[in-house]
Image (cartoon, rainbow, N blue to C red; front, side, top):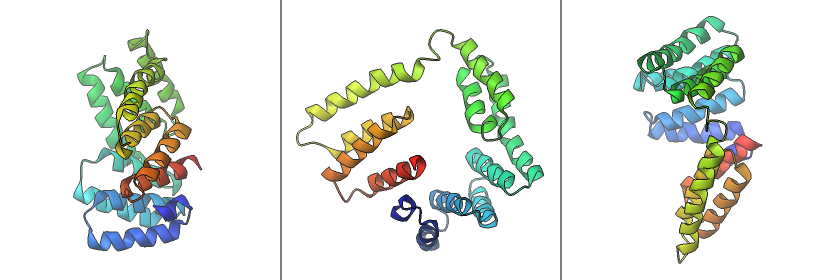
Amino acid sequence: KYYESCCNYKAAIEEYTKIIQICPKNVVYLNSRASLYTSIWDFSSAINDYNLILQLEPKNLDTYGERASVYRYWNKPELAKADFKKVLDFHDAKIAANPKDASAYASRMNFLYYPMNAYEEASRDYLKVQELNPSNYLGYTEKSLEKRVPKLTKKILDSNPKEADEYVHRAEAYLKFKKYAEALADYDKAISLDPDKISVLESRAELLQKTG
């Protein structure tokens, strides 16, 4: 994760490869390496890793979506369409089962149509979510954040000695609502309290990679 945060993708790939040799069926590591291969435009290697994941987890829709995106970057539109269709069929079936499920439309919009650059379809789903939630959709995230963060802040203030985990929980809440600066500050505080907490170091590195 350190190498990722420094954008030293090839070194990070080498580290993940060492780990995968020890844990060859760990889909998290395979997915991370695939993402890194994509970052350096090594699409063939990325596809190989996604194929390994799907051998282990044939129903992993996220991986179908990620593999489809790589196929699209690699100028293999037919293969991309085949993978996107698997994801689309799942979301369509979920909507057919419950046409008033706003979250199903939101998922299809965010995890399928936007990655496909299908903006017209995404706009239709966006309008459908608004239609199903006319009173609170647009303000949903901010209202949820306003309720969640004060509770987490109170737990931080009440904890003595201060617990790194409480800052991590609040950072995760900030991340859900794209409050990246606040999340980074909480990760930094958690690391200062527990410098050896590997999972927090990894989360911080991922956030830095995401935000540049």
